Length: 214
Image (cartoon, rainbow, N blue to C red; front, side):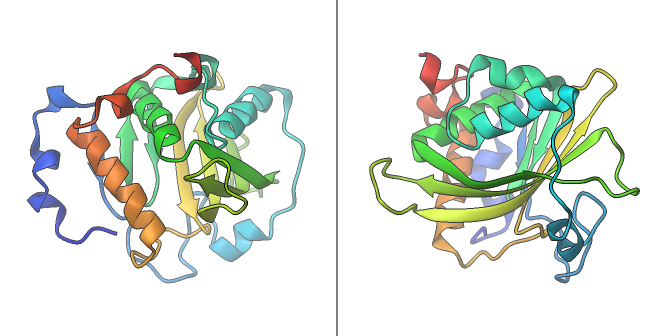
């Protein structure tokens, strides 16, 4: 995903006060059958049956739909604990402000996103009931009027919650795997956006206020 070692990117050595804590790291290299964040293999999570969310899960499920359709609102983030962590194959965002800025900024890059598939999955015995597993396809559009998406990405969301039913860890794994190919230009574009976010070079990307509410 990255063309050179992370240590050589000046933005990542900037003082902590310049931007929320955001560290870039490709998820660990592994074979196709390595266990993902759920503790299962990609084949196992893709084979899980769909279920209806419990009442306490419904606000979290709704927030995920808003985030992944480029429609975040202030209420979208109320399901996160203050110290929540978001982790995807490119990096980690620590803290609710960092998570807000990432998803709000993503709307600038992809003003339209659709969910042709969104399934809440059955938890096998090995996965705690406090964890929500979601299998989704997200169709991202650089041009919201385009007939076809720029890219459709399948991913597994592993959402871990605390006793208050707040999200403490939100992990997104593309194609249910712990890593993804760096050869895809789409992911390169996304990574460039993430670097700009961390470097605090583009003010519009750093707002904690949802774009739909400005």
